[in-house]
Length: 230
Image (tube, helix red, strand yellow):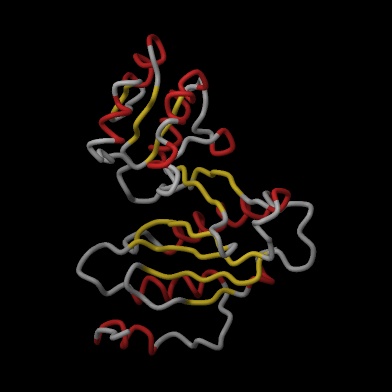
């Protein structure tokens, strides 16, 4: 893969054999963000879980204290009073059955998070093949299947992020933008790590956090010492 001059320069500052302290890694990541846009700072956590086993799944959500720096568009599946409540709480889109063909047939996906009241999950279930692969299916563990749509929307708009294992047992999560201060990114990072540690399945033996890497959209990966995060 061909890398640009800016990436090569940024990568020179990173020692690939070093496991950095979180604060040093975040400082390096900020320095390596040299793109013309405000890059996203991401964390990639490789776990000792085996996601093929139901008792080793890791999934949840956490509100980052300083948000993600991204404007999040929320779609709520609700009816009646709950639909009115969702609109009042600041949902970007609210609807019911009429949204199914729009999403299924017209490919409408102008939203980032989907919230649903429990009685609407039968309707949302019809969209599983579209929403599932994109990680957009509402889920009770993530707090996106709820009767309290006001709280769900407020949390999401405030910077709530979902974390879950991918097929290779890695968690990929944004923790902010390169324009954030080092303190803001450090706060968000610690909040995420605390949540992931708390979600450790009891069935996992040995080391839980195998490797932790922080990176920006266009920057090099910077490894954090996972032993300091337990």
